[in-house]
Figure 1 (cartoon, each protein chain N blue to C red):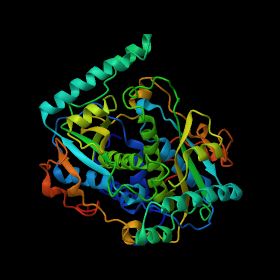
Figure 2: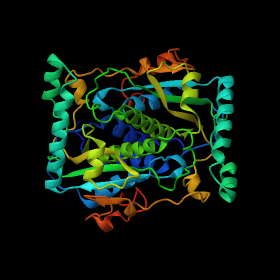
Figure 3: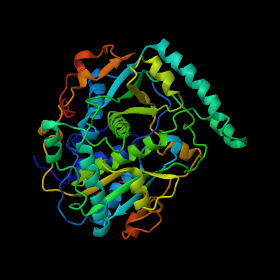
Figure 4: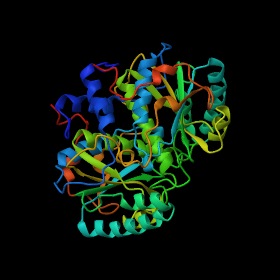
Length: 234
Length: 234
């Protein structure tokens, strides 16, 4: 079926996923059915990749003792991270729940095999990190697909990559890109938590678009004044 | 509306976008309506970002003379890239159309401001490239939203980042992450072009998933034997 622009019902479903995806840090303990998880993983496996190199792998971590070891590492790094903020901002940082490693029934590390189909990968001669970027497109597919299935995802970035590589026994040519907590949730927040808590404001699209060169206003101007991605859909 | 698992019609729309997204290198010259482009850009602006730092900007390039200058640069790098392959593989490389810079009516560079809301960004104390990864989640949102609107996108990775930064007059603290060609297409290929042309095979999901540590088979086993992300949906 040669579909170009999607029919309205399909568009709606897609844009609802974009609008409702959140970074989640609190999870319910309920198990995730294998068929559901398989769909989410397959969505990740259908991501873009430089030269079709598909450099991603998925390491599932469910074992409680292993998640406890990881949680201890992240707690240590979180306290070190607090030293970079001062006064009220430091208090806010320390009051935020930044991960759900133990709440969530499933953690998933998405890795990048830097030698997959290599050493020469089509399109990776000038931008050597194009393989890492490919893995991140898989992460975003995973995240959105999880949301569609009613699963929350939180990306834990407060950990040392070398520590994690060792923890997961990754070969030297494989690096961890994302460590995700995955599970059902009590509630998907209406807005990003760091916005609601006053950590940072949401940037309006109109402030982010230039034309031809940095700082130059785009010809499309007023068309950028939309607030929701669902605006203009029926 | 507190939606958790999406209703079937929404799910379908989302998974169709995942399944039908392609890396496109041939475009029709037809102009893109501002309202359509604004929705695609807003989908990108609703991506995930470390510490809600939203480090992305979008530099639109439509001017023909500017696209010609960029095309000349990419052509040069493409020929250099060919030197990394030999024999029949080199011939195949040179026969592939790798970009649509001049065909497409619109090019978009998505950049990363490495100092946005910084220097201290929540969650960016251990993984310093978390801001670049955030920008790539915006790229994937852009790519999928474009597909939903019937627009093809091709990521051009055969160019030098320093050259591009200079070309777009980016400040020192801003780096280009993705250079995209965007436009309507005659046809969305059924399968990824590099698969159809025999460049590389598609990797089956079951080969990519481990549990607890690299190389260890996952408990979910057979559930991973699904070929399409649409399998199991009505």
